[in-house]
Length: 396
Image (cartoon, rainbow, N blue to C red; front, side, top):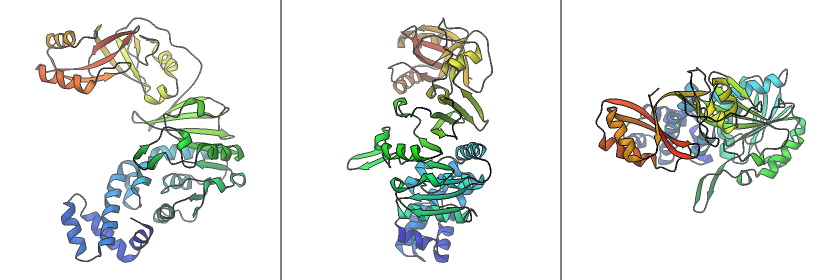
């Protein structure tokens, strides 16, 4: 879909085509296209069907708003989940009283600017791609936020964050060049590049920078608060907070939708033998290097100093870790594992691993082929004091 096709999609005729395409969602694609082509030309038909498909996919991130919003494939993929964007907007407005003026220099299709505007911010947003800008404008209008949002075509490198209360930046993290496609984990390959981002941060009174959860620690500027956010157990992103928007803390993990937060205290988890329970910390805590803090919460220890599995003798409920009851610990051997599972009449297993080179898909397939019991278990492949081991646990 190009800019001309999207512009036509916003006309009354285009919106009718989109409404019909939405009604056809889930039907045979060829039949849907044939039906629309009876009334609309090929370009509008394609744009309407593409947009209807994107709206359906967007429901997972945007909920009911997706039914009124517009997307591009790349824009939807990079967009922040609505709950995460709302959390960030709440943090930002709590740090800046009144109605903060925000400069969003990489606005994409507008997921974050929507959350910021709803939180009471006035947002000037820009993006280098005219189609993306048109989509963001359409989203602000569709959600009744046009009075708080201005979106223009512009280069982040030429932006002036000095005139705003807060700078927000979400650099593109995808590579589409020749045969290279997909996400990039190298901040130097961000768009705009990392040096441009750092220059913007240095000139902003306050800033929030959205980055990939796997950002190398050496790229995090001094004096920055780094926050990793997990939504329903899945790490979604990290944010770097600078200036007056930062709390002075170095590392933070946040769990949504509950809003639980954990910060670095410098505690180091002890090591010791595997106890009755094993705890798997949430990924946000692991990314933020807060495993020691989680171990302290459950009164636990590490079975291996280099592996983020915590073990303890007592059950403790915490949102920061999943708990499994350990039934048996043994050196890893497929033959011994299979025999132990047969003895326990276990025919269904969930396989997890950390610090193991075993191909768990292959192992799971092999176990399922040869086991026939009616009981279930969770199998954890890991190291115990640097020795490859397997833990047979009750399923949660």
